[in-house]
Amino acid sequence: MATAGAIRLLDMEEDIFGYSCTETIGKEDLEHIFRHQELGVGVIHTYIRFLYDNFTRGNDQLSNRFRFVSSSLVNKALICREPDSCREYLVKRFMASSTNNLYLWPYNSGCHWLLLAIDPLKEVVYFLNSIDGEWTNYPDMKQLVDTSIKVFRSQRQARVPRTKSSNITWIKVQCPLQRNGIDCGYFVMRFMREIINMNQIEIPITYFDEYKCAHYTRLQLEQIKEELCQYFIEKRLISI
Image (cartoon, rainbow, N blue to C red; front, side, top):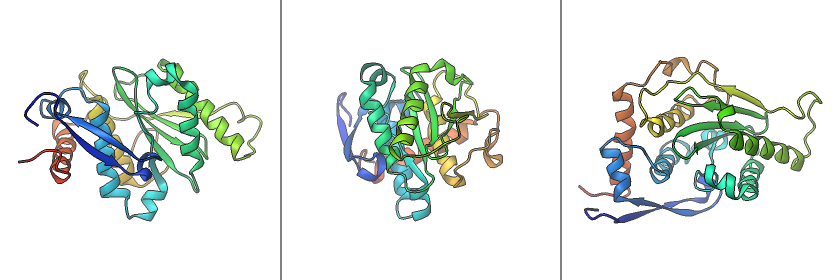
């Protein structure tokens, strides 16, 4: 991948996002990792494939508990341009729930990554933002999630208390915070890894004791990058 514009393709199985697709990884994506620059959706999705292959695939408990939402099909640009298709995709993902599932959705606001962990059956949304912003700063995203959960509720003909009927529970998790304008994608990948590793549907407001800290260290972020690079080699996306 020595030339600019060179690409590699990574197959994404249907179980990962609810549809089969091919993720494109460009030379520029790899350079962003090696130089510790802002990450694109291709890298985030590759790490999701890594989590799927190394944590949830073949583990009935984890695969039934944790699922993923595609950032290619639901992001700020598409929510503004095609809100109906975004809602239809989310509802379809939620309808695949057989038990309590936590859907991990790396959301890109256009210039920043954050993580939503959605339990559609309990109608709870965990909001993990490494710059300490509020979900009210993302009104289009919040409206989409709330509407999708309500449609999901209607389609499964669920009855909820009157006081709950118009309110979805949003919880701002006191997660580790970044100290620059670059690390958001790396934080989101680590959040997903830690949530799956803890194997809990409910995320404590003060985050998991095992991973609680004010900021991730450089070593903790390097661990994510090393896992990515090893996975790139394993899948022959790069050669050594």
